[in-house]
Length: 237
Image (cartoon, rainbow, N blue to C red; front, side, top):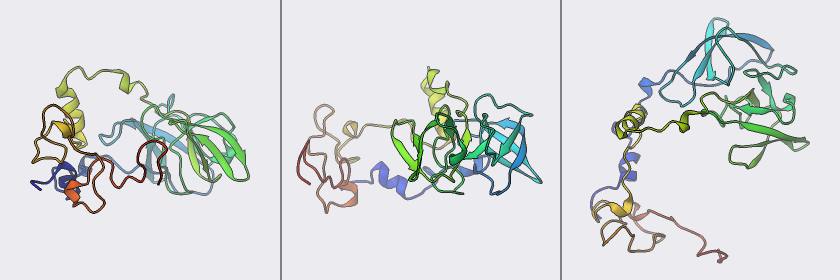
């Protein structure tokens, strides 16, 4: 088969591809509290693990970090668990958010800490409430029905202009990717040699073989459309 392809090497969890967690600031999750709590924004910080800035909230004798929405600044007083004050930075249950409001850091299940719409400039919109749950429109334009007790942060995550600034130099992109230990630069499979990837070799950049491997192919051969169930548009399963 030749040597291991990149995806196999990354699966071994070697230090070359491991996530550099020692560089990251902290875990980002909602605090578990059942009563309405007022908190103060102590600081806005940068975390190498994330594209969005983090706001540090003073919560009693400990601090809590969450993605910072737009227009939230140091010294602001936010409310956790409020049912009426729909202002940027407040944390509410989906059932209490007005229709049409922009929300971020959304929980998929109650008390899971927030899972989606956490990167810079992202948000979802509350579009419907019914007996089945609360429907939100995600950045992908898809609608998702969630539990009304899922918590969200009101507002759009800050840093939305980040993708608009070009990198200009390859070295700048290298250092940003290096901070998270992401693989960069990425080499196309068809540009590799035959020993490095099943799609490698051949004249010009083309695969030279079907992109769907056999069902019982060895791990190094399983690239492309793995175990595809359809053949072409409108084909049988």
